[in-house]
Image (cartoon, rainbow, N blue to C red):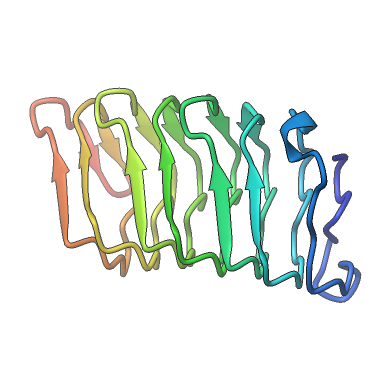
Length: 169
């Protein structure tokens, strides 16, 4: 699925389809930037064989669920899940970086990451997310500006032995 393949650059130019399904979803191994950005489709989508979620891939998408195989995905781009409507839990165990605004305003019920794999989080990485689980980050050395602003996580655990800076410099 190419850049903007089933998405748009604004809400006005995204496809108006309310249901997007794939007969052979297992054959999809790559999606482009903004592949589903601003999608109005409200069904759940399953993509188990992609290894990367590029910048703005699901930006503002209205899918009720986004199912991915978190053991296969090794990279997630900026704004990948920004303001997604999906309310399922998401697991991404093999990423090492949580880029800028990747979960900003997302409606996921839970966000699961491997606490030892994550070495960097970006600006507003989790800002305003609806996730309510406990999040643990053992190997980050900087907590950037607005990283956890107005999140609903029940607890945030960060290994303080590694912290060099919190917020802007």
